Image 1 (cartoon, rainbow, N blue to C red):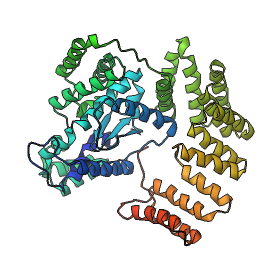
Image 2 (cartoon, helix red, strand yellow; image 1 turned 90 degrees about the horizontal axis):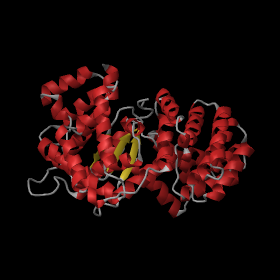
Image 3 (spheres, rainbow, N blue to C red; image 1 turned 135 degrees about the vertical axis):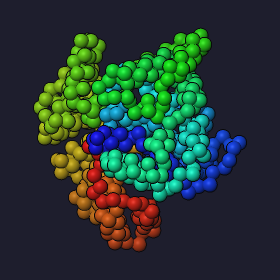
Length: 478
């Protein structure tokens, strides 16, 4: 039972929304949303902080870059929004996705693993974007506002702690039923999100049949899957009426086609990385066994096996698999980049630099390649070249996990201690360690001296820590 509650915490994400909404007096009736735009924005930011504390939020730039690209493409089919949208991936085997006010869309690795096309991903993102643009959660808050902050916080704590006895006691004493706690979209909400999601994905060139295939897959998983009803179906009711509604949409608007956009190699690469780096190893191997029967999928079999070997620390096997993939596409920058990573893992630094250098020439705007080149030069103790590549990666928007740590190390090796401590501070911020972050920021100030620009930059970082409730070394779900 304890493991069940640990795995089911994503289903309780709505509780965060209710907790955070309680301090506000919400307007009654007439408004499109129960919250103002600014309240939605603040609420979204607070929920993201809670997610960062409680769940394993994937920060892999190789994965997030693609997810954000598809998300932004889908979003462009909607009306202009008052806040930017962000797209997140959580390491969790459950089939789930959810959105919160302020433009934050979350997917789990589990739901990505079961998809079969880029169109299914666009359908899911379009549906979740519509929940935000139509203010469905904000409107639900008006109905739940009488629930006290204390009771809601205690209930969520019980669920997140993995102890059903605590959660049950609080719910029985304060909320009567667990159903009151869990946010569930109404039939009208789901139909409206399907309508708009249908419009977004079809405008983006995808056949809306992908929406039906995804919903049907979730329904079948709930009926026959070994892990029970998907969490997505608990908060997004998948009724027969809803399926019929989507099928009716397809029939009514079929003449607007043909929709010619096909699933891209980028989607297959994204899914392969999710499965091999963060998913279940056996499930990934089974998928590759199926793909091996299709000659057009052999590239992804080699690529996936290469990443499984990387995950297991088998550098020689990873090099072998990536080289097989590279023979099929000799000038593909990402294959050269990932082969370079495998050589880096193997300790063959010159080979790593050679492959990463080729990838950088072919795609000079790939910040990930610049980052790994920095890592390779750092291993070779060519610190200025390492710094040059790290800074290029930063300019290109790539700041992966441990990026600030490596950047701090490089500045330290160059005896630039002000910047070294500054980036160590940012590294500890990302790890949730407020005490060590403050120590390094304060030390950075001593080395920066009177420079007003640098002082303002450090002061801003320190100020951002004042309202944070960091819990040093807090364990997160595996």
